[in-house]
Length: 394
Ligand code: F0G
Image (cartoon, rainbow, N blue to C red):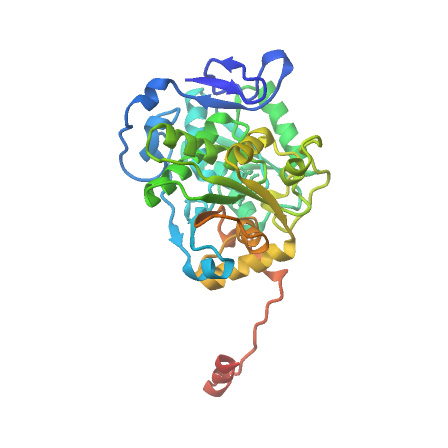
């Protein structure tokens, strides 16, 4: 096993404390690469969830809350509305803390333990902090979370509070918090960094691709998911590539990223490759992906371009409409960021695809306030049957 720099291709010895490429001040994110022997024979897969895939992970099982193994729901009604013949939702809100972050955190916390850290830290728009706080509590570690003040949804903040994390409300946005936590953890090596810049954490997140392929018998034509700091799309693409290398699937899916209109640096960069992958002062109701400087942008752009995929942006209104549509057509309640793939499919039809998987990354209860920003009608009803019947027939 070794680490490879995604920008300058330098190779480094495996080191869980190495978050960025040290060669000539490169500073880009790294990725974990395994030896050929790992792919030479079929891995022994046992049980369910993330740890089913332990032969393709960089650590042995350590701290678990039962992450992974989430539902892949066939959505016929929604598929008809969106014009997708075979639509599935991979519902990551079914993870222990209600988001996909748990897949990475179970692996990341194991690494923190392996290097003897007593404290773990992250900058977060909410879900990473909720997940890290829970897994740190389970492991008996101190958790420090840096949050953009006033921009974290109530459900997520409650989780960090409940699990006893030390909470720093940063007067700035996620990108400011991210910069600060990288500085802290590179200077204070006893504080283990658990953002997706940590290549080992992303290894856990790639297991979503394995689960989708095992359930469908091959890769789908396209996989659509929200993109914020751009770690998840990179991790899942790596998972599909590894599964193919093992000979378990014949083809790779197109990777399609969904962003919110005023927080869409990846979309902007893909349209004009000479402009930096940056948006200043990002803003959206989908606070989970309110990010202007995604740390893993290079990996995400490679995933989209190499897979023949695409990226697109949707407005806050389109996001809320899609959230409601999914909840009403299929019984799946997701947070606003997670509705962006549905909104994107509604806005731009994907060409030449039959089987599409949308990843809904976080549970709807994470952000109870978002719904109230859309018009909600609730009737006051007199306590008698006639009034109830009137409401039923209305
Ligand atoms: N969906 C949800 C619900 C998220 O919380 C995030 C990221 C994403 C999508 C985007 O994933 O960053 O890997 O591209 N949330 C991070 C956090 C930034 O701090 O919880 P990504």
